[in-house]
Length: 250
Image 1 (cartoon, rainbow, N blue to C red):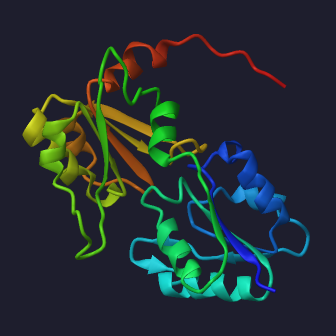
Image 2 (image 1 turned 45 degrees about the vertical axis):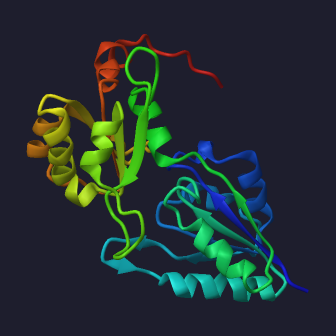
């Protein structure tokens, strides 16, 4: 009897941001294949005896290749097991969830996808930067600073920056300065910008300034990082940093 694979978005890092459905699947899975950015605390919810397999990737170093991950998911499901592929963020937002699901579907293996909170949504919320709103920006675009070689639809950052009010760039920690200079070349050196590192985790850091000042101060940062450039970055200084303390609930 063939099992099935659930590709679950674990959210950006805060274990409290995984969905109820995602957590239910983690608790019942026979096998959990998890990424580097998946919230590790969630793994403590796995049932006794569940097999935990690390398949993390980082720049220049992969625990498993994508083909190896695909084969592992298929093999475990063909054994009749419930398999959770636990990812950071959202599986269908530059998460390769569609590639893994397509591989399984082509082999007749049931696959479902459980969405997660995308990293850029959490980065904006936890840093106090609205993505869009009537006061600051009515449009924003999300793109990636890293693409597979030869992939279709390679983004033109300058064209994007000129077409929308705000730009969000993912997977660009290693070239943050270059990305910010590209944005500054279109929107001007004083265009407000922020870099949010390790969003929603205890290690979160937020750098703000202008596109040019940040490019000079932080040509690269530790991943994961989200770059947000737009007038709404000012809201962080104007309101978020001077907000009254929130009540604590137990």
